[in-house]
Image: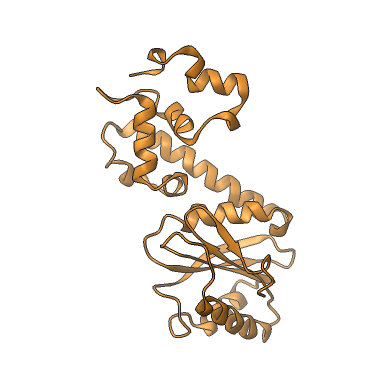
Length: 224
């Protein structure tokens, strides 16, 4: 099924032009990129299948052309087009975070980290290194696995902060369970890293816990 087979008032393209992109559901936006479905599968159904396969937009935004191969009906041209659009979205967020203080738009920081971490099936500890004006220098994955005081090494975070001449950092890690709730281990780790980084005058501005749909902020909860 293609768009011409969908009733005019329900076609994503017409809906977007009449009401704006924000009026479209995730599957409708993806359907606009696909344009056509498969035999027995409408374009909207195919779009939803893609979102389900990648566990939502966060996972799809991290997909590379090789990942998209597992979706039946996506040829090289469609895979390349989708990958290009997703990369544009990622670069746009990075550019915005690098051009001004990250706390000028805390939601952008959360959106960026969700794109990078929410879809992962393993736990990752990452650090956003910022310059003296709190603009993004680099997001770097530092450690993988269950976060404990023995698996995350403060000296490595301090060393990298010095190498990048960071003026501040934002700590971040994902919870593969999907629940963005800080644990006691997370709180202990935050205090440990904060103390270590204070020795080189690099403040910890926040620690963000990335779940499937939410991002919890230590700073917002008064835990820093």
